[in-house]
Length: 431
Image (cartoon, rainbow, N blue to C red; front, side, top):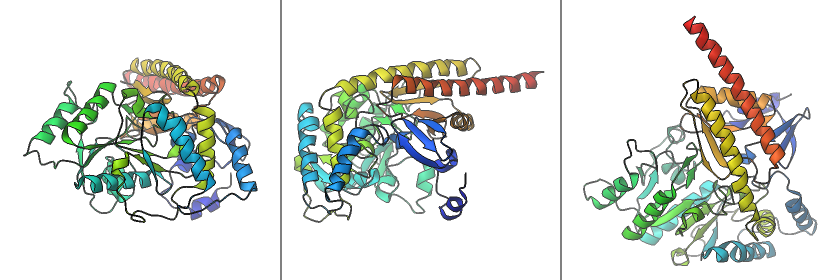
């Protein structure tokens, strides 16, 4: 592997190339290949950006046809046939079947751009400035989104104070059975709580970077009720959890709620192309022309692939059912691995929803060792959580059962190897 030029010229801020030190050349479906033609099963999928796999042939064909016909690659926010096809398909296949009435704002091409826009929409519409976010939340690293991100690693890198956000305990964060809903309600109704009535409550239904923390259906319904009671807008960050990742197109469908604002990106394009959008209830669309702009508002290539993805995979609920079924496979295997750790005194646990699963093994160093061993054996998988202690499965939704089980077998073998090493160290200490 000749990575000298990359190591010399790329910033120290890089992360994934440190965890997966090889040079990849191509990818197809759920498999990556490096310069030595070594195969890797992909349980990372661009951090949830490749729900339909690498170079999905159905999407690729239409994309190539569009390019060969000289379709617009860039058009600012002008109207194009690609944009029209996208919004009409979105309305027909996604909004209407779910009883949702949204208008679409095309912002910058990444998730943090969508969060920035959503926060400003809420503040402009309500005339209030405070926003409630939650412990372990991750919403992006531009300053507005960073203010709503809880992880100290990212916040410290801002090099200046963030503002405008009050943090509350997420579902399950409080110990001893205390209700975070009750705490939030008390805070909002107590004039001496020190928390201003917020313009919006911003949340992930499953916290990805925060450690695969799953909000219960009851908690999500409770948040929705609180928002309605106090005239607070509900923003759901569906950037990683959306596009089918949890077993529904939108993650909030599980709770049967209708957020005021939804942010989406990552797998929205279906092909790994930069693309983000904000969906908002029509009465919130109070922008004046050009008041929020950007050179890359929308991506015509992404419009094309996203439209095909919706037509191919969301005209019915077949994929949703498959995600749920495959999710139970990962859940079962992760629970087995958690029990194996528990037998040696490590309080591991499995958690997740759909094909967004996590194995919490408590210790970030152990998790890093596990990821390294998996990579050496041909599996790309990452960690998350406040201490990097959660091994996270974000495999493509279209992964075959054989590929899924092969990846899980690699992970299981790595766990067994690690447990043997731990047992040997413990035996040496007690000898």
